[in-house]
Length: 312
Image 1 (cartoon, rainbow, N blue to C red):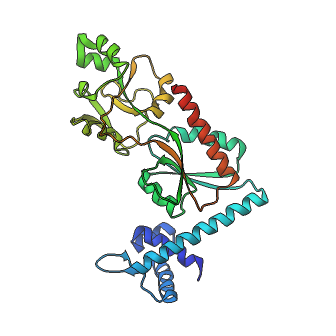
Image 2 (cartoon, helix red, strand yellow):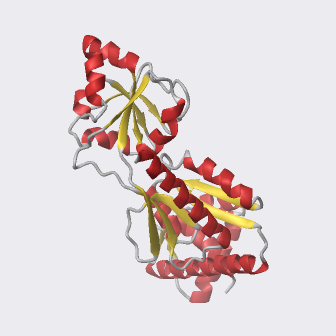
């Protein structure tokens, strides 16, 4: 059986929409349908239920597992041969948590390119659950994200234990707390409860549940006046004159030295109900890690170790 047909079938199984898959793969819908029909004829089974909507049959799920396994083995052979031939040319497909690794990736990529200038880095910014699924299907070489799913086929290397901070300008505190501001700032340096600041306007971030969870797990109703998809906390004037923000320790350690003195950071004493997952390096047990992939892992471990030491 041609591996091309298995590849097209696996891609169609992701979308469950032949029109969308054909457009994404730059082939005709008829061509895609022909590949699916060829597989169904070869295995003498129906791979998709067509009505009431497109869905995999049980046989389709079995073939999908096989197709993903074939893809992973093919990637492994290519990666091993690349190492054998010592050709420093290839691709790394890296999954990243949208918020907490958005600052780290450019720094790691710059160092990596100094040693492997001919290796192309592909970054995929998605939520951890989606990254885990992409890892299990062999679509990624590894991820730097939260390990929410303890799967036996995944190897997890813990990197960083995160905490939360409230980022707020002294001017905004003065506007809301008046004469009590100075005393409040001094008291807050060792830690705060969000309930004491719930009257402040806040920035919300669509791409992460952390910010909203912070309030809901404390039984609070936040006053979000700014909602954004991907925040740029490291840029000057990040709404600090009109709203406070919640940042993770990863972000805090990067930006604290680049902001004016009037921007304050207070560690948040979080509710016990508030889940805050740690960052890990995650790879598939059966997927070959190239020499340059191993180098990226080493860089990542060193980078987060330095962050931990900066915290200490």
